Image: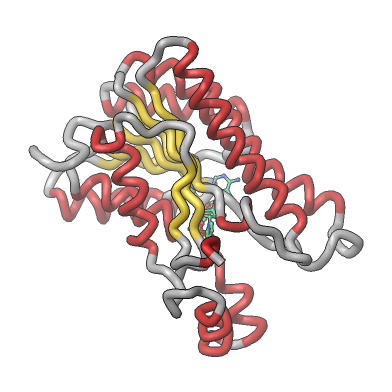
Length: 259
Ligand SMILES: NC(=O)c1ccc[n+]([C@@H]2O[C@H](COP(=O)([O-])OP(=O)(O)OC[C@H]3O[C@@H](n4cnc5c(N)ncnc54)[C@H](O)[C@@H]3O)[C@@H](O)[C@H]2O)c1
């Protein structure tokens, strides 16, 4: 089977829904095998089943993974490596928002949970996936940061701090792999507001139309993004089209960071 990522074997976290599911679908459509890992196993299973039904064969596999749990990473990567006959790409996409206020209001336990899900995940994923990517070069790691990792807001201390950490950790991983002489690249993607369930708490609190219009007004292109806008960026970074791109940040933000 041909395609822009034919022969690639990608492990994607947070793939039950939203951006992770869109990335898995886009990679599968372009010839990759995909391992969908999520704390929501039923959701990952359902998305994998849909991909397999569309493909008319088994190219997608589902795994239960809490990205903050070291032992679960080791087990899920080993299982995906066996199922796909290797792992050549890692997409660290699982992440949570939900600061609920400024730094004085934010509960310390909540701060630590957001940091753990958004940052420990990238550390653990790269730590344990690099050996598989090294066996399946060229390899690619894509970390989903956020425009909030580059631009702060007054009321998102944990989200800002965690996504900024993902940004520089991506560069650290890029340089580490290069130093080891591996053809394994590492890059970050920085989306602005994208239409996924992560926006549901805002929609429920303030109304769907109002929230989407308010967010769209902040974007020079005048709209929030679609999941496929991010999937296309991930597809590029996982394909060999980006073979000389490592340690880079790809902003997919409708122009927000240009202001
Ligand atoms: N949608 C946006 O506006 C937006 C903007 C910038 C960055 N992002 C980032 O993109 C990524 C995906 O976001 P989304 O919009 O698809 O969100 P989403 O809430 O729709 O999906 C997140 C997925 O991650 C999973 N997940 C949560 N905690 C997990 C854990 N501990 N272990 C494993 N899986 C876990 C959830 O079950 C869910 O399937 C996140 O890292 C998010 O911060 C999203």
